[in-house]
Image (cartoon, rainbow, N blue to C red; front, side, top):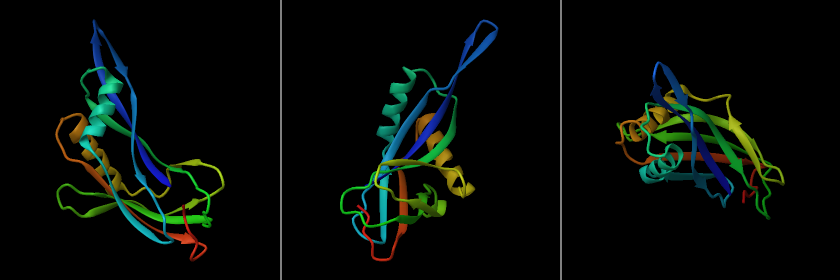
Length: 165
């Protein structure tokens, strides 16, 4: 079972006499990809409601001025019966405008161990996909509009014919 989560760092400005205080609450919201075959393709959705609920819990109803995408990470939780040693994956986000998927990362290699692990995706991030994710989060969080966020992943496993669980 794999989880793909993203952290959103939210900038909230509060005026206090002549000083400005900025609070940076962090929210986490994610989508779960469940893989049961060797090579796979899957699509998941993070709903506007899920994001708004996380924002409400993190901000106590204060207004949001800006969204900063702090990181994207993968949580890998191998299950018994897993025979794969690694997964090479592509992750993309669906554009609200064109409905096409825009890459966030391509050919990202994930080593699968015996224990759960968390990998922060830093190298190989594709700017168009990251910008699309930030734009969609900004629409939902700051402008209080937008749609659900849809992600797609395609991956191959190694060794060939191995099973990811």
